[in-house]
Image 1 (cartoon, rainbow, N blue to C red):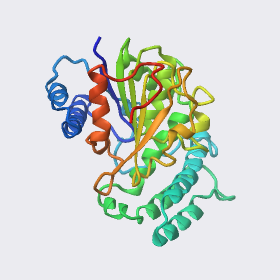
Image 2 (cartoon, rainbow, N blue to C red):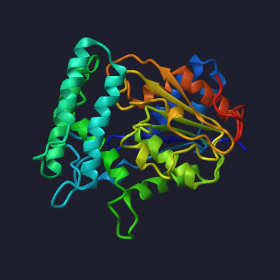
Image 3 (cartoon, one colour):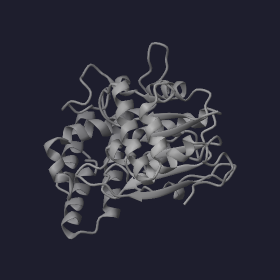
Length: 332
């Protein structure tokens, strides 16, 4: 049986699933052609079977404000700093620390030292809005880093904090609906529905990598290839200890896991997942690979998908040439 391709998006605002599926397919097809898989690229962009899927869940973050706009998504805390605000606070520190580990330029180090002092919680800080104000200060400082300064024309600190807030809200495991189902469970349900009975090649970006990982642990669906792009999974003090289940490990249904990161991706700190996750019972472990994209905002999913190093293995997996569970992990 041919594998279904399932895309899982990350942080950000509302999307049109049909348009996003087309855009992600085209970006991936461009990478496939560059990797020497022209036939696979042609099949991908011409496919009208509806077999492939783009999982959209950004609408579940709505709290009455327009997502993707210029307003920060403040953590919801009644009478003090609640779980979401605490997670956002921890994310700020982990974010800056992770960036500091990757940057040695003297100018950047000074900026990061200043951002680190801004990221530290204040003893007198009261309420979740104080955390958001601190986050805005940190984001404003980080936008001075090379090469992200030019991105300030279209990615504002408020947008960056709003997107970080989505990570905090997912990990808080709260916000039950009328049926008592928490936000994170509702998001995973959409991914599980798209994957179905499989087999499926799952390509997940940013926060979507966390969502997809947790979903695959719940399913027995065969996944010959799991691809994560710009993933925050290994953020050791924030995301990693809050992953479900614990201790974090590779789902048993995954045959191969390739994790891609860009040095200039400010979300993918601590990118080497193989150092942080236990292999599956079949010995499958993540294989992390660096890619280098042009531009000032390399966290964009399309930039990752257009990389031949990313698209080539996906083409092979869709053709049925990737390893299955117990195959021993990624290929070179």
